[in-house]
Image (cartoon, rainbow, N blue to C red):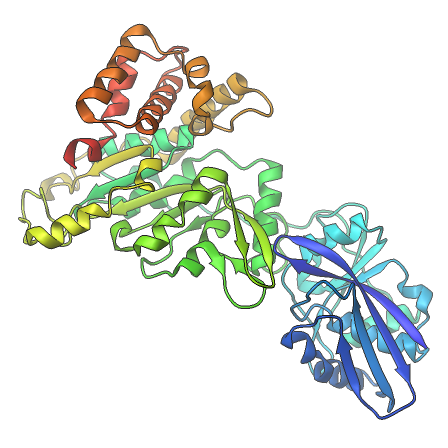
Length: 506
């Protein structure tokens, strides 16, 4: 008999329905899997056989052939184990085929028959619902994310034996419909913890309010990392659509906490400067996996020791910074991942880190210093709107300087500013000032004559490129929005030019 169960192959961020066809026929007891399976699926033969035997069922001493259709789609991962095991039992007529009709089955099997958590259940459940499935059978730890998809019943199972009893009508499975618990929002740091550095905190607020990228330059111990880690707390809360996107990325990457459904906290990713291009952008053997730029989608990508990253790795950031997506093409795979993040970079001013420091002089040789500074120029830096100096506070200032505004106070100002931008650009327009295209800058930024003259003067004196001038105007627009003003004045442009330190020091 030939049996069929339904499953899904997840490639990148998308799910593709797969028919798991099982034929049990007379012949040598061989278990064969066809349909472009990768090695992890070939290994399922031993997992499926042992799991069936551990569930008080006998393995058929016949020729078992499993076909994963469509055959042109390459499959990877262990999520087909449960579907193959149930298909074998249907082919042996120990389970009725109708019980599995329009039921999508997902799950990895352990040798003792346990059903283990897998990656990518959320996009798989979405694909199953779009294909007309009435239910999805998933591991218990994945039930909450599957329940985010409306229109399908979620059947969580812990063991193959439990699934068998349910399909035979001998037991029940408690459905997990409806949104599960949200992942907790945790802000254990506050902006008021950072003493001094008024200009740097101002830059952080402007970056949050306008969606701008930010580079902080300063000696070690100045508070660059402290400032960066406090950015997610002042960013606007994610919309439901953004939360769903972030949850989908976490599901594919296996980063969704057990039992949690919707992620509501913006991601914060801080890879080490030794990260490879594959680790930052994505890729690897088999199906290209998401990189840090995707894991930071709708959140913050913090690159500390920015000048220490490999040059080719930084250059690879150019396309996702512009387009908000990353397309990874390999010989056998081509996947597209979202990568709309806010870049926060931090760097020392020189290799030793103490150039310009009042207490500790620079000890760098001219050659290495020039080589180091050359890394703070180029196409990637040109895509960073704000460049800010961060100074170390003096010893007697640590406990005497005022704390400044708390995260909640700054977050309220940022939220009000983002609301002004949404009202200005409308639905379908730019998400923030940082996303305004060059062709719309004159119309949306409303420069007063004196402000326009100030920008033109900066182009002449500071050598600003056209892209740099546009970024100054966008930042000035955000500063005006924070002040609640409709037009951009010369004072707003002057404030924006304060955050172009590389234009005056390089």
